[in-house]
Amino acid sequence: MGYCSRSQARELIGAGRVTLNQRPERDPEHPVRLESDTIAVDGHRVARGKKIYIVLNKPRGAVTTASDEQERQTVYDFVDKESPWVAPVGRLDKASEGLLLLTNDSEWAAGISAPETHLEKIYHVRVNAPGNDALINRLVEGVASEGMLLRVKRAKVIRRGERRAWLEIVLEEGKNRHIRRMFEQLGIEVIRLLRVAVGPLELGDLAKGSTRPLTTAEKAALDEAVKSRAEICAPRRGKAGRV
Image (cartoon, rainbow, N blue to C red; front, top):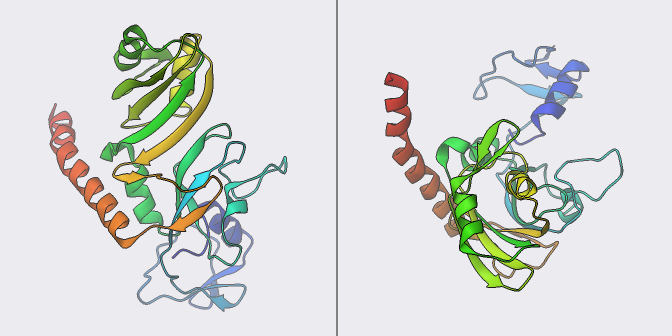
């Protein structure tokens, strides 16, 4: 309903602050009929909020959490304090920067970030190594890390120097610290990692630390991309299931 995160909801329910049809409910798995049931927190009825979609150019150093025990800067420091609750769509680690979506539409967020949709995410990565065909081929072929094979869908050199290079890397589905772990295994330092696109949505010239609403056209384009990718991938899943 866009009121809070799942973990926050569990805490509220566990603390006995939530009622379902005027009765206390402490089971977070209890089924609810949103069209007819009444949910309240601390006696105040929870209404379905307006769906919000925000684009943030996340700065390096900000963590993708609602709060931080170490009191580090979080992505919420860049969101309007009067805004309803929103949550990040996917994650960018502390040292990474660039395009991050936030929304209170959890179902939509799940579709955007689900690995099954294979929605492409594009990164610009500066590395402490000369960019060459051997490096690009190694990234596409894959690198073993922690018992799994990590690979990129596509990669190319954007700018080349004697010692350093800027690469464009495209991922379909990203594991935790996917790109950084690949370069760590290759003994290459990642100097900067910037996400510049998610599907058809590009970061563009949005200033670092700034936010803006996702436009209607941009959301429609993302929805269409997710739908198209899901339709393409569905036969693959069906075939795998029969085997």
